[in-house]
Length: 447
Image (cartoon, rainbow, N blue to C red):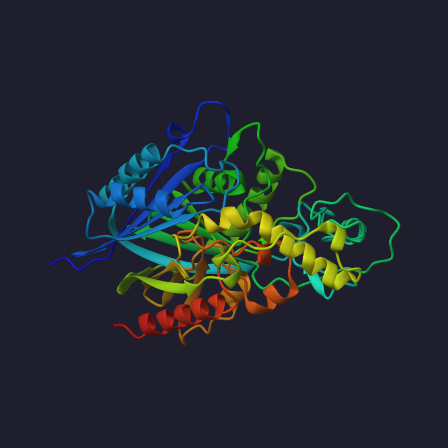
């Protein structure tokens, strides 16, 4: 029996699944990597999309599983905001199924290597979690400034938000105000890793690579065009340079986004070029490739409790009765924001459901573990996991984004946009974190 572990790549354009009402800029794609050993088969499918709801995921699964019913199937996205939900689901499933079939045809025995670096350039990756002075909480800065190497100066944006708060509104995109003496405190970033997984044929030819970086793809999404944003540009640069397929996986990034002053394709090009330069350096410094001798792929499902406020329509907050103290005013306005989001969040749930189902995926290649958390998980969840001794861990999302934001309890206490837009109860993230830890420990013990 042939027990060699085979790996295959394939990519395809998503243009046929998009309406022809806009041009394409850095065209969105779907990528598939296939792993196969004897009767074991797994497929990792990643789309340049964002919000894959349960119905879309089910439709895609049906299309792919029609020809590969026994495959362990993972469906992810790059957290790309540049397409929205404008796609045709039937066409999307057909493209994904054809790409999966091609990846299986391309599968051959493989060697692999893994390396990573920490990205320190601050304007490319930062936490959108900034303490809002005088409120005992945090805020989200949307589209904050870029200081060309000096980092993020959130001061004018905080001043604008505080002015809006005093006037009775919660505005994450409030106009910046100059001349303030505020000193912003940004919560430290827990995840600046750029990971590279490289696969080679047995003759030493580069067969394909996986790139992993944690940051929303929100640098170029405008109503003028459909775009794959910086992940699409990064793949193109590396594919042309290395002459092989390239797939991009986003890390848990519920609270991470690039710092940009305004959206444009130029932002995507700039960020991608910087990441590509670092990825090439990682490849050059990696140890020699090793033979793939151990391969396991697991997919588990867990139920998370729904926040109690979603079990019944929330009361409407009157702006005329807002508390005067800023901390309580902020929380009252956050409750009002949640009330406005209630119909959307409720639509993610089955009628009368008190739980929501999420999936976690885990791929083991020798001593490397690739963990897929459900979107939108936070980097704080990923970095808190204990890596089994002797292993390297790569964390990715979005693994079937059906639960909206999954913030840790401390993030919920502090407030902010990501904590408002959540379905899970306060205890949902700790349950998810423990399930991920158990999965890591169990898979690391397999031979």
